[in-house]
Image (tube, rainbow, N blue to C red; front, side, top):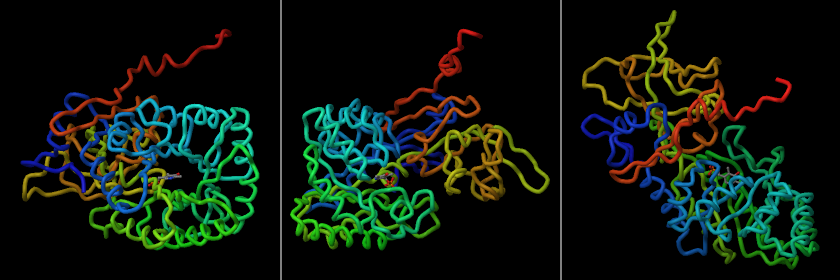
Length: 421
Ligand SMILES: *Cc1c(COP(=O)(O)O)cnc(C)c1O
């Protein structure tokens, strides 16, 4: 559920007409709904009610500080995967003790930054990383709280590029080796082992892979406790999927996920952390674009729009589907058309949809990509020297630009010429 709905035939973001924002900021742009972000965070928070828990938003999904502060004000923690994300979360006012540091290649500089700035825990992914963190902690005279990310070797049944829980993936340590790795961790005096971490992938549309992974985590918790480790916290990662295609069956709801967590892990008395990204942000954002030309090809019609793969790379990178809707609803009875919807970038991969049934559109019409809030703006680039597009946040009847569109000068002035030129 989201807050992008038609009223009297025109698309609104909460109480603001999308066309009005387009007229103010220009197209293309990302548009987010505060109410949708808040709703999705609360759904997870409520799903874990009755268990000691913290929802740590995986900020790599959408990391504008206005979004982080919106969620932080509700009590959210953050899951960060880089020093840059750590700095951004802190700048948005998230206290260090609500930030967990994930990622397979944390550098010593990043560790130092988080240990001095304050951190809830590191999710350690390898023994070399464990030793590096131990060294940095000892050098700073502090103790680093850690979980170890285990790879449970379950098939998340999602797109290969976002599956992370099979043994061939680079993430975590093999669960079969966990007892040895925890013994190693316990011998390092700069570390304090507090729990176990697992994250098996993204855009999961079925609870079964989660259930299999969490059952393995439950068994491991008991094994580690019998080895003498104190396991008080379980970080269960993110990954719950969203319905990109409205006609498809919907993925499980947070409340169903929460019930499964209680069922598989509730008896252990651990504090639970979850790291949802996509489900919090995905349907909280749309990408608004304008039709530049309608071009007749040999056997098809192209809708050439001002948004491109550099603005939203998911279709090119993951063969992802996005619902694409007109900002002004077609008059009833008007005949539709079928388009290939493409951007202006010089690559055939710059294609958002092929053979998509749409209302008949003309140059100057506005369209919106639904479910573009997660892994949208954060994955955009300036390919073709196209400026990063603005981000706009709506709250009720107000809207604000939360990242302005840079000018061409700002972009090209970042280049510096060497002395010999
Ligand atoms: C990407 C990621 C998440 C968030 O995944 P979603 O599918 O967006 O919920 C959570 N934890 C870790 C470690 C991640 O890498």
